Length: 139
Image (cartoon, rainbow, N blue to C red; front, side):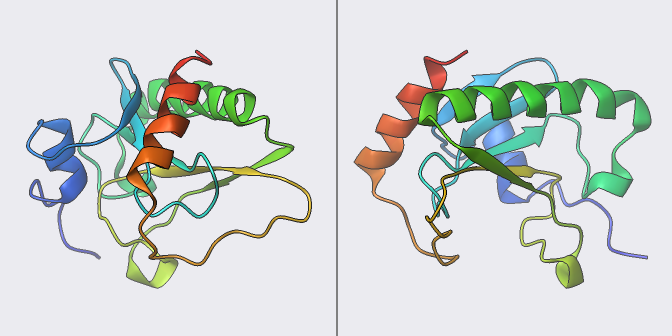
């Protein structure tokens, strides 16, 4: 058993407008924005508006609409970034690699021969804004 959902996590604060983000997409089920520590050019996060700590905590009725949003964002990211492929990751709990305890998917555009960048390195704000504009235009 893991701790309950914490409504003070950074993604909950972003959903409430208490923290900024570089938004690329929003609908009734999800919010998508640029990862400020991108592992690839165009690395985007998709979070549900439903408060859920991880995938196993997400109510089944909310999961379908959320996953449709994840798919829509992934398609736009791939198109905008002219990606040759996508890495889509979702982590659950500390042992599974989760750092922010609000369900989220990482959408990482990929190209042959280009490795992911190491985790934890802040991205250039202007470059992130440029990628966000490209992705927004792909919907």
